[in-house]
Length: 486
Image (cartoon, rainbow, N blue to C red; front, side, top):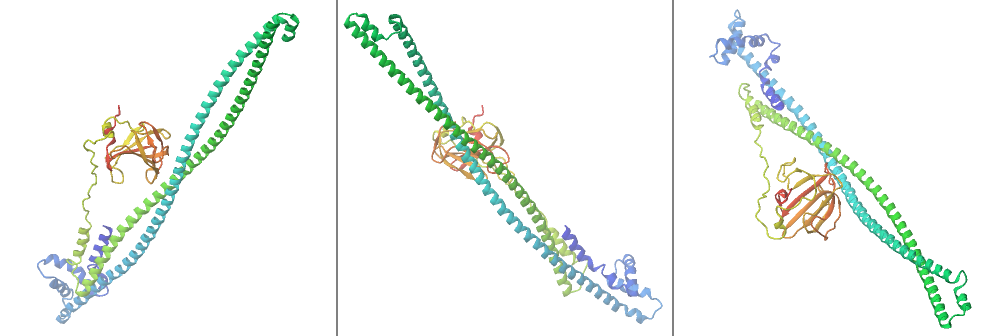
């Protein structure tokens, strides 16, 4: 309405312009003072008669020739009024055109700033993509290292069990040796067994058998001791090698955790930068919108003034009628058209589908535990509708596959972060977005309930949680109609 007010003030400039045009002449001054009185006294008379009668009354004692010359003066006054009215819109038009040119220059400059900011935001988004993909890879590597460490710990437990068995065997052998030594001592004292048998002079056959027995026992004892010693050496070497590998894995794991923290910090910093740039872009867009409205108002004003100038050059103006006509057109053209609300939701009432997955309707478990903050079909801030669910959950939790399937997509996507898509056959797909890390690769198969990802807020999402979709033949379905929350 600011432009409309300026436009109306420009159209009404003809009436007040009579005063400065005739301020130096006495008859004109009398005309301005007396005209209202005559209009009120003689409303039915024509404007021309109203103009001449005050001039006649202003000089009653003068000759008639003086009074007869008054219409010519009135005509000059009208010409001065017309000239003043024309000069004023011309000046306003030139000034408005200059203002419009300056305003258009500011808008062009702001558009360039917005374009530069958009490019900067795209660069930050690409950097955010690299950081989040790096976090996903590191998390997967850490999980693999954790699995290797678990296997190593199981190996250590098996070695410890074998060591205990060897120690039990060794204890039994030691008991046998003690009993053998005691028997030898009781039978022959501390001397050599072989020498004692020779000196006893017993039966030669019995003596030969005893010597053979003693030799066999000694060989068996020696072999057993050698075997036990070798096993203990192997056990010691394997245990030391296992400890070295465990130490090495711990160092690598600590280093990767440090890198993980660095990447998380870098991700937070880039998200803050992205939010700042987005705020700047939004501010610039609002400013551009306001300036564009100013531009429209100025354009309407210039058009109106141009029409006034053209009309006044063609014929004398009529302030009471013609100048107001163009003022009404901008007011009418500025009316608002009723908006159309785009709140139509996707069709979720589909019929039954064939296949194993279709039989799971009503019994599916949601992939994570948490609070469903955004439901299927509800309106989003940008005007569209939710095609799935967003489940708020703490970062770092497990994301489970809702059914058996095959991984058909596992990568970073703008707006969804680390995204995983599973194919369940018969055209059914489940989509898991905003993950911190993806555990599966394209082509791998998964079992129902298997952990496939880690909860996060990748893709620039302000909240941690999981974005989950269910689709059939490309059409989104309401996951809550398929899920069992009990």
